[in-house]
Length: 425
Ligand code: AMP
Ligand code: GLY
Image (cartoon, rainbow, N blue to C red):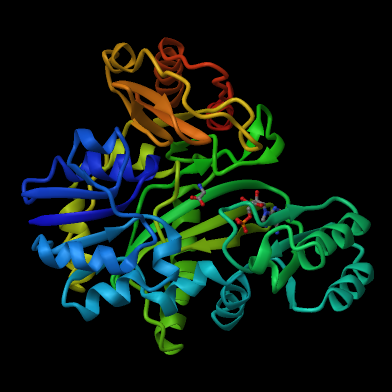
C-alpha cells in the first residue's frame, strides 16, 4: 500500500517508524516530515496546511491512504478534500474535528452525552465572562475556544486572576481569533491522563493509557508546553477506570457525534483529570497526542497500517490490538528558552550513540539538516524514547540516552515518569 503521512513533529516520526514495520507498506511519503521521518520514508516538500497540494500529490502518486497527524489540517477539511477525490483518509472530517477545534462545541457534546467534565460556560463578550467569573467562588480555568497550538488555556488560582486571563484573551486578543469565544470552567484537582482510542464511526478500540507532562519544569512548575515527556501505561488509570472511561466517556461521545450528524472516525483522544470523584474530561483532541504517541507506538505490537485501514473501512471490529507489556518512557529535549523564544540552528550530536543503547529510539521533532549537519529547528527538538522491564528501567534507559545527546541550550525535565514510579510503590 502507498501511504502519505501529514505532519512534521515527533508524533509523525513515531507513526512513520511504526508504519515502516508494516508488511502491507509499499511506499511511505511524509509531508513535510523531518530528518527523522526521512529514515522511514520519503519526505516531500508540501506544507501541512496546503490541502490543495496534498490532494494533488496523493492523486499523482497513486497514494491509497493518507494519515493526517496534526489538528490544523483536520480542522481545515483535509479529510473532506481527500475523500471527495476518492482517497481514503485517516482522521475526522472538518465537522467532526470541531470536537477539538471549538472548545464550546466540545463542551456542548459533553453536555449532550452526559460526560463528566468541569462545570463551565461559553462567552463571546468580555463583560459577561467577567460577571460570571466574579460570581464564582472557585478558582477557574479560562480557555480560548479555538485552536492555539495547545497554549490557549490559562489556569488561575484566584477569581481575580480569571478576570485578567479573560481580558488577555478577549480584549488584548493574545491568541488572536482563537479567543473570539472563551470557555470558563472550574479548576479540577488531580492527576492527568491521556486515553486515546481508534474509532471507525461504529466501533471503538481503546489504546493503552499514557500520561503527558505539560509544564516545562520539574515538579510540574513553570508555563505549559506542547508536552515535555510521556509514558505508557499510566498506573493512575486502573483497569476498572479504563472500562469506566470507555463506557461513560468514549462510547457516549461517539454515539452523540452520530446523532449530531458529525460521525467520528480516526483517533479520539480524551485528556482527563483523574479527580477524587473519578475521571473528568479536560478536553478532546481529534488526533494522536504528541508526545504520548512516542511511547504508545513503541508498545504497539500490531500492524498500525492495518488498524488505520480498518478505521477507514469501518472494519475496526475485525482487528485486535496487541501490546508489549513493558512500559515505555519518552523524554523531550527542547531548545533553550522554549516554550518562550528560542534560537534555531544549533548542531545536534550523539544521536547514533544514544540509539546504540538497547530498546532506545530517538524520535525527531524540531530538527533539520544544514550544510550536512543535523541542527535544531523547533522548540521541541527530540523525543528520546525507551522501553524497559519496569517503568523505572525504561526511565533509566531513556535518560542514559539523553545523556549522550547534546546541542547548545538543550533542556529537558529530569522527572519524567516519576509519578508512575511513585505510584508503583
Ligand atoms: P486543554 O487544552 O483544555 O487540555 O488544557 C491544557 C491544560 O490545562 C491541561 O492539560 C491541564 O493541565 C490544564 N487544564 C485544562 N482544563 C483544566 C481544568 N478544568 N482544571 C485544571 N486544569 C485544567
Ligand atoms: N500531548 C498533548 C497533545 O498532544 O495535545
